[in-house]
Length: 298
Image (cartoon, rainbow, N blue to C red):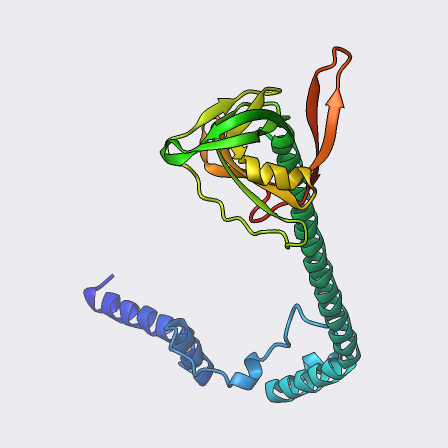
């Protein structure tokens, strides 16, 4: 085939190809534009709204407008609060009752504590009383027992003066009736002869320094010898005078020199006549009346 025909054939073939392809349309343009993934405009917020999920299924919470749903929720909350007012009042009554019961419990506890204190006080008093009773049973007790007398003739007084006639010696006796020794026991005696009509004299204890002794349980102790001169003794035998004898004793417990005990007594001694024993020996008889303490009997 001549070279000129080839060119014509190729030109016709190309034209047919171009004629078979469709021309660009608006749809094709949109498709091409979509294929290029152009960014789209954001949708309105109203289109993205979704009801509150997970809450009460009441339609109030599913209102398409959030403000209306919130207002509905607030209204229902107010109604619920009003309904719980009665429960709040009951809760207040219960709280008030609890407070009253708490106060009563506190008062009862306080009364119980006071009763406990009173019981403890009674227990302490009982223990103290028991201790004092035990101490009183065990301590030494020097008590007045009596006196002894002995006549003498032609007594000698101060300065060697001789008192002719018959006098009498009187000596007070006491006993430790306790269960422990009385240590550092000091005895003071004093005597006065007064007319029968005279009142009882008052004696003042004046301990003699340096004269102390120990008197064991059940042991007998004696005071100093007191001498009634013949003229006073004659007045006693004539029942115109009486003899007053005062005794005062201080003593302690062994090992306790802070607690001092004292015994005190005053005797009124009168002449009661002559006693004759089976052998014919005559001895004077006296009667004694204890007049009690003068100062501090303990």
